[in-house]
Amino acid sequence: MFNLKKKAYKKFDYILFLTTLLLCGYGLLMIMSATLSKETMSYVKTQGIATILGLVAIVILVLLDYEFLGKLYIPIYAVCNILLIAVLVFGTGDKDWGSRSWLTIGPITFQPAEFVKIGLIISLAKFIDNHKENINEPFTLLKILAFAFAPVVLILLQPDAGTAMVFIFFIAVMLFIAGVKWKYIGYAFLLGLLSLPILWFKLDNYQKNRILNFLDPERDLIDSGLQAYQGKIAIGSGKVFGRGLFQGAQTQFNYIPEKQTDFIFSVIGEELGLMGGLGLIFLYFILLSRFILIARKSKDLFGSLMIVGFAAMFLFHIWENIGMTMGLMPITGIPLPFISHGGTFQLSNMICIGIILSVSVHREELSF
Image: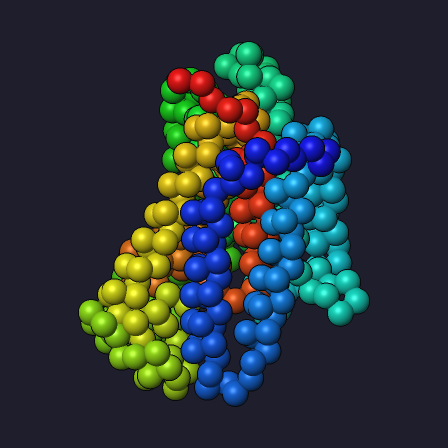
């Protein structure tokens, strides 16, 4: 369980850890700016506490041999599904945000799906590892798909289509890396296309409006299209170097809805400009590059697939969040890793980093 040797510290990825700290600091600064007009530090404090807890989690997970998580993949998978069922029964948030996605236990309110992402990636990586020799046999592949998509169905019932898309993306990437044949990928793609008309009629009105507003940005600038419109104004007004930290008109006068969470990249674009946005993207590039490097050096398929799953999850969040604030993607309410406000989201991201660093320090020495 805890079997870290002294020489393992030489394999600790300090670049990944430092990049994570820089992203956390960047996020705290932008949350402070986004909430400055509200004259409260509660958002910064919440994010700060989640970051500190995340750092503690990283230390514990680095000391923990990640193979121990693989041995517990069935209990982890069971807890994930129990949490999602509990959300459907006891969850809150449908009146305020359109989906029942939060659980309240005493003074703590959290979004279980954020932790379920981690649990499913761990469980699915081990499940695929156990069936890697027969992964392209139809019955085995169906078992893997049923295992992977059971939590996705529970999330869709909340309903939370944005989070479900994150799950579908990292599941697809993990199966591709595991060696699923192209013909099965083609079948899945064709099935997805045929399902689009059915999915459209299952969407709520606000979800349909988001897609229609993406296709026609000037369709409803007063109501459902206001958020995207104000976000693009903020980013455009920042130009190359921005208006200055704490100086954004759209930000400080509260023209941007959800500016500390989903649309925090608009705050960056307005106040720090193109250079601030490119700086953030560069940090993300380093982060994902280290993920891939550690995955390639992992001693087993289980470790590699876990990291690939985390990389796909982060990539989808980054691409979708930045894209939707710029009008390049439909709005889905997906936050930006380490930058958007959200205690559950911040802690879950830090846990991912801890697991990846565990794979890094516990890998076997490679011989060339």
